[in-house]
Each structure stands twice: as C-alpha cells, then as structure tokens.
Length: 217
Image (cartoon, rainbow, N blue to C red; front, side, top):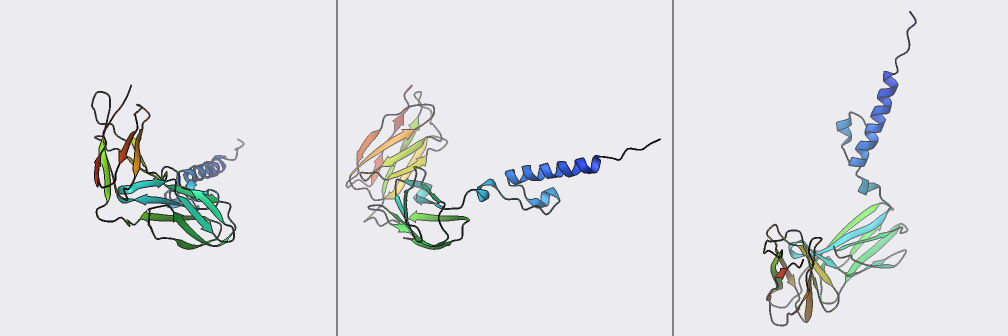
C-alpha cells in the first residue's frame, strides 16, 4: 500500500507561527510559547515618540498644560484631560522637555533626554509651591436616587484653564488636593449614565471646599 507523507509537521509549524503572532499581540512572554520569539506588547511597537504624563497628589491628572520640547526640532503640545502628551515623528537627538503652566511647579522642572527613535516615556509631578496649606476640593457624586456613583470623572478647572481630574470612588467620593487655590474654579462631572450641572467655587482663603453633585435623568 502506498503511504502518503504526513502533513502534521507542516501544520504544526503554521499553528506555532500563528500562535506566536497572537502571543505577540497580547504581550505573552516568549518562554510560555516554548520558543525564542521576541514578543512585546503592542504599545512597544507604536510609532516612535516622546510621551509622558503630568500628575499631582492622589494620582490627579493635570490637563491643558503646555509642554515644550526643544532640540533638533522645537515643538509645543498640550496635555490632554488625563494628563498625557505625546510628540511623534521627531528626528533623533537630544531634547529638553519642560511643562509650563501658571501657578504650577513640576518635579522635575524639565528633563534632558536623548531620543533614538524609539518609545521614550517621561513623568512629571506637581511639586507644590503653594503658600500655607494646600487647597482641597472634595465631595460625593450620587445618582438621582442618592446612590454613590463610581468612576465618574470629576474635573476642576482654574481661571487659567488648567484642569485637574480624578475618578470617583466605589461609593462616589472624590478628593482633589495639593494645589494653589486662588481665584475662581469650575467643577464639573463627566459620566456616561447621568448629566450633572457644573458648579463655580471661589477658593480665595478657603483651603477646604466641598462640592457634592446629584445626577440628572
């Protein structure tokens, strides 16, 4: 009887190749696939960029801050509401990255980095600079029936347009603290389920401020 050559080895190679590609997309370690594959998360294969995040006490996101990137190419970008910024397609070379906003001091004040065309990540933290006690805005976010609303985004906007944002807790509480509190501020709540009316706070001389919100149908 004539024997046919087995196609199992070839099929196995195709299967392992496909599994390796899938693993690469999911960021699975190469050891778990039993091979010498160079597997990295998708974030590591995105377009080259200098990126980073601006944040304050309690993981507060600081948005609408100008970030200056000076080097072979000079660029200015603005951090988004979650504090992130990114500048892609820069030529390689040495850059000085400096966030700049009225009444805010960051640590470090600037960072000098060498960009080689890959993914470069930088973190900047609000370092205080306030006189006396830091200012605080806190409160609770509830549904129309009075139940605490979790994961609503609470955004505090100062007179310069700088934003600070935090998510509400599992019981609906939030706390934005550790910032200069001069002038008028707007507090607004962003939720997929309910709408909320914004509130205006005048923080001059008031270190502790309360702002509760009830959702509208």
